[in-house]
Image 1 (cartoon, rainbow, N blue to C red):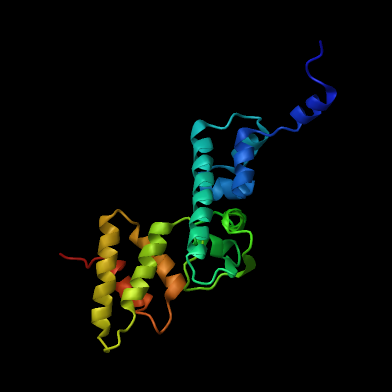
Image 2: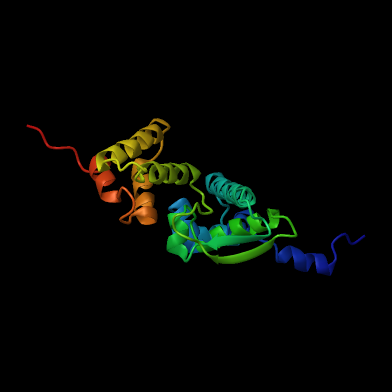
Length: 222
């Protein structure tokens, strides 16, 4: 008895490697996988995709973790959108390009679009979804929730209060948030870079003051 038909053989020949399946699911190119996920050689990634060489368990695990993070980001963003008071129409913010997507923790714009698609799928069917550029200063869909939460907390505490407080008082409040972030094991340098790119404008405490307090090298002592 012939157990495998010609059609099945054709389908089998079109099958991809597990590694390549996961890479495509994550929405990243071979070059992006090499540079931003594995820090590996591009020719190695190409061989893993073609199944010419078996992908090491470690790199397969890295793609699995990325895929889970993308899924979690989409679910979290959907919950964020559904928490808004007006649910008849929802504005979904998309990173403007690969650089903006990486600012939000994704390895590529394609990866962020995968997460956005998951978020849109989770929204109620009767909600009108409008997709447009993300608005700076509003919590974005992201893969770095600890940094996003800390950055927005800094921005909120650093705003001038009704009673005009001093810049030093605002900086002290921001530094208190950063101390909590550090105690929790957060990457302060990455936090400061995100904060600078997201919020550095005259109405905020400003990146320069926080940078001076946190990132400037320690004075040299004899």
